[in-house]
Image (tube, rainbow, N blue to C red; front, side):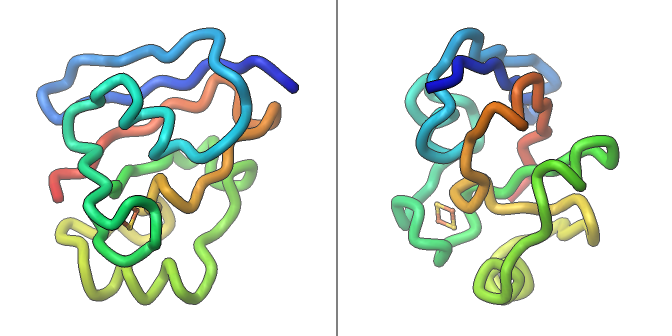
Length: 109
Ligand code: FES
């Protein structure tokens, strides 16, 4: 199992670096496990609530990959401040060695 680091930029601009975490599970689970502000994950990762909304910077979108149809529908219906090409639900981003160094911004929904 790979060990990676990811960073969340919280709504107040402060950063939460999660260093040396296992590359398993989802980005949402990693963020929620340390109480990242704004990662509420009300539906527990079922891609149904939109309360794990993050922005992925352009330099990471290819490695993170695009949302599938179900995630796209949830983004359309459940989040405010949607940003095409950047908005993702962190419960749908599976951690992997490819995402070591990922830095996302928590959205305001
Ligand atoms: S946790 Fe509900 S959509 Fe991600």
